[in-house]
Amino acid sequence: MTPTRPWPVLLLLVVAACDAPEVRRDVPYDPRHGAATTLDLHLPDSTTAERPAIVMIHGGGWRSFSKDVYDDQAQRLAGAGYVVANINYRLVPDGTYPVVMQDSLCALAYVRNHAAELGVDPDRVALYGYSAGGHLAALLGVAADEPDFQPDCAEGGTGAPQAVIAGAGPMDLAELESAQAVYELIGGRLDELPERYERASPLARVAAGAPPMLLQHGEGDLFVPIEQSYAMRDALRAVGTDARVLELAGAGHVVGPGGSPGRQDVVVTSQDTPEAWAATIGFLDATLGAP
Amino acid sequence: MRAALALGALAVALAGAAPAAAQPSQVTTDAAPAPPPRYDVALALPGLGAAALAVDAERDLPARKLSLVTGLAVRRAASGDYSSSTLAIGVEARRWLKRRAIWTRHRDAMVGWYVGGRLDVSLNRLHDDVMDSDHGQMVVAASALAGYRIAPWRGLELTPMAGVTWRTELDLDGRLPAARRAGLTFGLAAGWMF
Image (cartoon, rainbow over all chains, first blue to last red; front, top):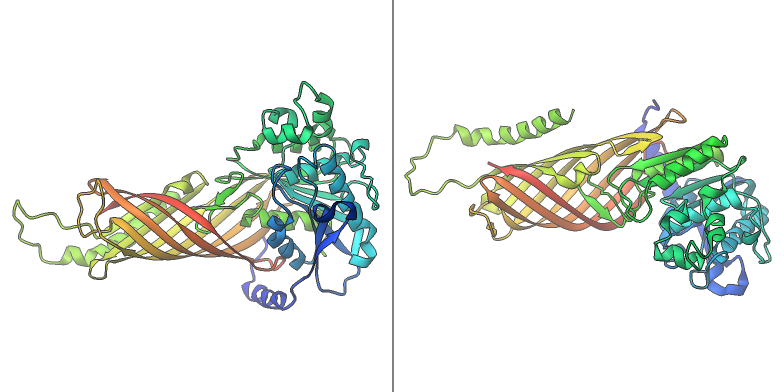
């Protein structure tokens, strides 16, 4: 058991409050597509030369929202010493398969290509996403070399990340074929495009050498069943990869245990609970090393 | 553990009730209405689905149309390759408006519409079963709530509530900066007034 020492912690909090990370907004990683392919850089203020980095991929069914939904979490991770790139990507209908995968991979390549400028260790980069973003993070963790996913952006392609944190991510799209968002992402039904469903399903792409993965999921998630995260964990472990599931009772897809344990709060994802934050920082320290 | 907490909350409520019980008994007639309940012990129903047991003990201050609530909760939300334990305490002040409600025979009691302010403090510890390591978090939540209580049968009461909550999360291991956020919150409690 790690003993709790509140006074040093409070001192650190005060110091941290005076040392807020710098934010560079709307940096284009692929200038051809305007705001759709920009990212926000959250840079910890420090002299450390090579820090681990986190590329954050927002959710929204591949067709909604933007990097703004991850802004607070990005700033908190940067406050912990990670260089954070919080990305936009082209949304459906512009971003149907394989465009969203290509954009996400291009953003990952951007971070590695600019590692020296950003103070990043290019060999310590994690992908972090929720829902659709969790799907993309896990998919690029296991299939970054998929020919369909190679971007034609100036940054080019890149290899798999060194770690993945996926919250409530669809891992087997064939199981979710009735979901309109999946249909629109793939561009057709399962019986029409079975090979696309397979290529875009992280569970079907697991192979030896996959990066360690933390899968966070609410047990009451009605959009993406938690069994998908457990199946992914088991498949990863079968090939020798460190994979773990954080299951949260009382959490759905966008509803979670409240600030008071007797209530429920909206919008709280299973990735944005105290338990999930504790798991995230422990996992990042174990896989990327402390900043 | 859960039974002990429930009994503890009940003991708090009963301790507050003791002075009233010690007062001289009133002379009553058949026509005299029963005195309204001044105490309540309630269980948060959403907590049961979140592996949490959250109990509130409440005391009425009828002269001021106020009630004071103290709450105690435990939660074990994490599973899979993790386990967690959360201990939370809360205090709340409620202002009761008309002090009567539909389907409720009690008058001038803690029923009907109310507005309240609540402060909850919870300590959470997550255990990573894979790494055999622990991580701690503390959450301070301030909430502005509105609710409506009915008591459809004897002392049984149901209280749905909703409001806005402001949370501050502190990492007790010092790895993460504090996080502050606001959100909507809702709840449903079932209890017994006496």
